[in-house]
Every structure is written in structure tokens, then in C-alpha cells.
Amino acid sequence: MIQLENIEKVYQTKTIETVALNNINLKVAKSEFVSVMGPSGCGKSTMLNIMGLLDLPTQGQVKIDGQGFESFSDKALAQFRNQTLGFIFQSYHLINDLSVIDNVELPLLYRKVTRKERKRLASEALEKVGLGNRMRHFPTQLSGGQKQRVAIARAIVGRPKIILADEPTGNLDSVMGNEVMDILLKLNEVDHSTIVMVTHDETMARKTHRLVRLFDGTQVN
Amino acid sequence: MLRNYIKIAWKVLGRNKFFTFVSLFGISFTLAVLIVIISLLDNMLRPSYPEPNRDRSLYANRVRLQNEERNSSTISSAGFYFLQEHVKNLKTPEKIGIISNGTATNTFVGGRKLRLELKYTDDVIWEIYDHEFIEGKAYNNSNISNNEYVAIITEETRDDYFGEGQQVVGKTIITDNTSYRVIGVIKNVPSIPPGPEADIFVPYNTSKSDLSRKQYVGGYIGVILAHHKRDFPKIKEEFQEMVDKIEIPADNNLTVLTAWVFSQKEIISHLATRETNENSVIIFFSLLIGGMLLFMLLPTLNLVNINVSRIMERASEIGVRKAFGATSGTLAIQFIVENIILTLIGGLIGLGLAFGILIFIQNADLISYTNFSINYKVFFIAILLCVVFGFLSGVLPAIRMSRMQVVNAIKGEIK
View 1 (cartoon, chains in turn green, purple):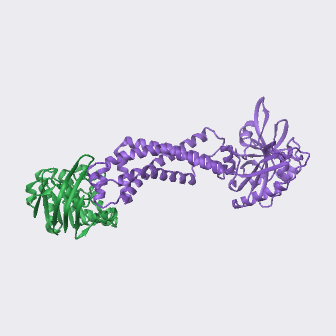
View 2 (cartoon, chains in turn green, red):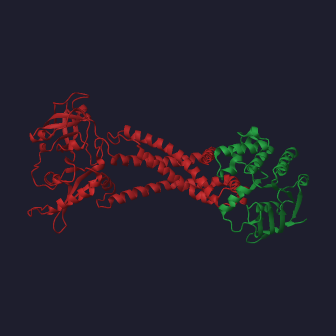
View 3 (cartoon, one colour):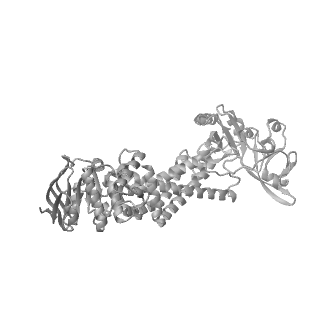
């Protein structure tokens, strides 16, 4: 499903060259739930961003369903992300000015979906994460766990094949973290979503199908 | 989508009230000034009381006589003879009337001195203009043929001379030692050049000057009413042909005659630019539009600045939108639309302010008896200005915003 081939990411400034990722080769199968672990600054998030087509590798290739993206325009990439990928961020990145349901609807705004259909799909996604009763609330009125559940609803509302989660439980206590993790596991088991999750938490990582470890930009297992 | 933009725009406005106040103040103040200028100009150009046909009127108000060597000349309004004997013979126009420039006359009422502006006219002028008669009627051809000393006075003149609200038709008014019988009282007239306004109107043949003299240059204006605005070029052409045929007697030192007919737009342009050449309309309107754009520049730059700093606040939102499929173009449009919404709100406040200023000008009687209004044309121009304003001040920040790298934007880093 996802294939990283010889991925290298180098950040170049005038004086320093920092290698963030070095010769990463990774395959993620369809419906697989993979977790990525490693110390801070080892390149986990960079890898996830490259996988999610949010960042470009310095060298190497990303393929999703056998498709490379070198020739994709900004518009084509945006459309691909919209149809195929869903993102969950550590600090939720909800838009505080919009209500919960409006936040969840966001990916659908960039598709040809009627307002009524958008509302229906967003409500459905919120029901799935157990927040059907919080639709009219604003993010600032929610707890951290609830915010992350809204972010999950936003990630799944467009029914993407792949969910990329960057430390989804990183800002949550263990109870809320477990709740979020249970939702992700259920999405994988029931909806067969392919999930790649970056985490610091060994316990969470052990619940997934496979664990990938990074150290100083290099894959260690 | 638009609903979503409006929702976000509204929230963003409420987020930083000081920024919003500064932006809105800049926009509404600028737009108010521009709307007032447009409204004043529109008031002078659009057909209004008592000239309902101003848009299809031309004015023969400028004549020049030069010597053969072209080193001596006299330039002024038209002479009565020139208008009566030549201009009135034009075939293309629907009607041609004659009105003099205003003459200040003195009159005394109960030991009090009144200064009245008097204008001499023919009878046709009352068919071209549409003054509202409160009492009586206009003088006609037979009044003029019978050399009747009749007068039409304004409401204000009546109140000053005879007393407020009096019935005065048939009564006598004496000005500059000449007695006139009042034949009609009209509603006060706004002062708009070249203008159908005066305090008292009397037949041209009551003038003390000798109108039979072959005068080409003088103190009169020919008001030429076209059947349609599109006849203007044809009328101007016929007018020039007529002028070219006139031969000034050789005993006159100045024998080269040039005369012009102007539309209201041209007259206003001449007054504003102090130029009488053919390009003055273009010069005037270019200067006007240029000046307006320049006037809009400062608040636009201010808004650009404010918008750029607002991007910092919204970097993460931009990143998230991009991650979930928004293209740079869509985001740029979103930002421009939000900005146009902001300027439209500013525009509405500006429109209200402009309305207040115009009411103030009107009530303070800075321009006599003018009835200012923000008509649909002025309103439309104001809205257009808002959109242009919003677009100009939104486009640069929008481009900058849309070029942000998703990863940096999500982290809240502006690069």
C-alpha cells in the first residue's frame, strides 16, 4: 500500500547539513497498523510527513498503491491527499473558530459534496468517535481527549484508505490515550484502514501489528 | 464553501478587535470620503431638478474672437445676437433656449437691501428646464413679443421680498430700478453650473443692453436640447459648420470666430482642470480616478500589513487545510473573499458615514438647495470600490499565505 524507497531527507543551511532521514526503506501493507518509534529528533515525524506527501524527500521515492508522485502538481497532490490520506496531529490542529462539526467537515469542503451530505458524513464520523452529542461545541470547550477524537473524526470523514497519526496520544493522559488508541484499533479492524502511527509510548506501539524503530534518521530493525 | 468563508471571516474579525477596528476605520473613512466625492460629482452630472434632461443637453457657453494675427483675442460666453440669429437655426436639436449669466442686482425692501441674482431668458428655456411652479406660470412667446415686464421669482426671493408664503402673482417687484410683474414663483433651484439657478428670471428683451447689436461674444448661454444623447456629435458638427460660415464684418478688429458647445461633463471638467481643450474630460477623470486610487493606497497598505500579521496567527489553520486537500489557489481565494467581506462591512459603515456627511452638507446649506442622495449608481460604485479595495489588500497576503510549505505551516512557522 505504502512504499518508501531509499528515502533521504537532508536539511541544508548555509553552514550546516543535517541528515534527518537516511536510506529509509519501508513497506506498509493494506490494512496494516504500523507504529514508528524512536527518540525525539530521530526523524519519525519527517518520515510521516514524507509518507503523507506533505514534505518532499531529498532523494528516494514514495509510492502509494504503486503510484509515484514526482510529476504531480500542487493541485494534483492536494487532490490525492484529500481522497486517500487522513491526518491526525499531536496537538490536534483544530480550527478554534469553527464548531466541532464544521471542523470535521473540512476535508469535504475540497470535494464536490453538497452541504447536506457534508453534514451527514461529519455527524456519522463524530458518532463513530463517540462525540455525537458535541457537534455544536467549539474546540475550546472540549477536553484534550475529546479534541483528539474530533481530529480523528476529521481524518476519517472522507473515508481515506490511509490514516497517518503523529503522536495522537502524546498530549493525553493514559485514560484518554487508551480511548483514542481503541478508536484507532477499531478503525483498523472494522474499516480495514491502513494506519501509520508515530509514538513515544511503547505500550501503545505494542498494540499495533508492527513496530518500526528509527535512530538518528536510520531504520534500526 | 462561501458560507464557511463568511463564518471564518466573521470569527477572525472578532478575534483581534484592535486590528479589526484599525482596518475598519481605515476602510470606512476612505470609502466615506470617496463616496462623498462621487456623490457630489454625480449630483452635478446626473439629470436632476430643474434639469431633467441634463444628460441630453449641450451648452453653447464659450465664444472666442481673435484678430488675423492671432495675437489678440477676447473669450467669453456667447453674445445674444450669435445665439438668436445663428445657433437657434440649428436643425438637429429638439429645442434651443437662451439664458444669460447671472447679474447681481440691488433691490430694497423696507429699508433693507437685497441682492438678487437676475437672469434674462427666452421663453424656450422654460420648455427645456422643468422648474416646479408653486404659483403662476412661466412667461411665453406672447409675453415677450408684447414687451411685457414680467418676472419669475424663487420661493426664497418671494419670502425675502414680499414675506413668507404670500400669494404674489400679479404683484410688482422692483430691482435695479425696473419694475416687473410677478408671473410665477418657482421652488428654489440648486446651484449647479452652468445652471438654471437665479433669484429672478425675466424676459431677455427687458435688458437695458442693445440686443440687436451683432454681438458674438457676450453674457449668454445657449442651452441645446438634443433628441438623444447620441445626437451630440452631429449637433457639434452642425454647430461647427454654422460657425465656419459666419463672416465677421471687416470693420471689426477681431474677425476670427471660434465657438464651442459642451456637455455638462465637459463643463465640470473645464471648471476642475482650468483647461478648455478637448482632452480636459480625459484629464479630469484620469486625475479623479488616479487621485482616488492614491487615496486608497494608504489604507490598502495598512490592510496588507495587518493581513500579513494575521497570517502568522493562522499558519496552523493554513497547514491543516492544505494537508486535507486545499490547493494554494483555493486558499488564496478564501483569503481574498474573507478580505472582501471585511471591506464590504467597512464599506457599509463608510456608506453610512458618507450619508451623514452629505446630510450635513445639505443641512448646513453649503451648496444651495441641493438635494444630495446616494442613488443606486453611487451605491454600485461604492460596492465596486470595496471589492477593488478588498482585492488589492488581500491578494498579496493571500499569495504569500498560499505559498507556505504545509509542514512549516502546521508547525506555525512562516517561511
